[in-house]
Length: 224
Image (tube, rainbow, N blue to C red):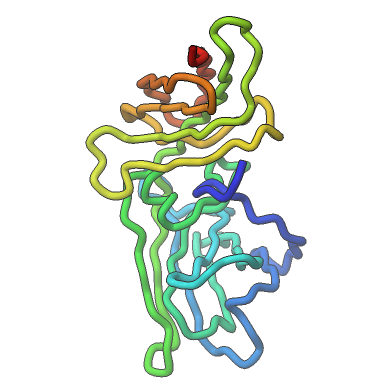
C-alpha cells in the first residue's frame, strides 16, 4: 500500500515519567515553543494515558514526529517545539485510534482539526484533544469473479456520503500486502470502490459500527 492517510510512523520510543517522547524534526534544543492541552474522553471526562501526536502543517513529511501520553490529569505537553503551524491528534492504535495525516483525520472522523501557530510572539499554544468515536476496521478481499483467485493490486476509494470536509480518500495496493485491514469511518454510509487493471470497477456501500471489524468480499469481473 502506498502513501495514504493511514500511514503509520515507526520509531524507537523512550519513556520519560508519564510521557512518551521521541526525537523529531519539529523539536530542537534551540526551540522554545510549547504545545500543551487536555485530552477528553467521549464522556467529557479527562482521558488518562491517551497517546497524542503533534503534526506540523504545510510542510513535507518524511521524518519522525513527537508523541506524548496524557498524565493523571489528562494533560499532555510538547516542549522545545520550533516555529510553525501545528495540530495535535489522537495516535493510539492499541486504544483504537490509528495514526493519520491531518487530512485523513478529518476524513476518518468527520471533524475539523484545530490549528495553532508558534512564532516569536506566541511561544505557547493550547490545543484541547477530544477523542472521537473509534473508527471501524475494514478487512477487504478482492477476488476474480470467475476464478475466485484473490487480486492484490488495485486502487481503493472510500467516500462518506453527506460528509462535506474531506469526504473521500484513495489508496493504491501494490500487490505486496494480503488481507489488509484498514481504519474506516464508523457509523456512516461509506461507499467502497475498487478498480483493478483488466477488470470492471465495482462499488459497495457499507456501515461499520464504532470499534468493530467488518469483512468485505468484492468480486470483480474480468474485461472481455
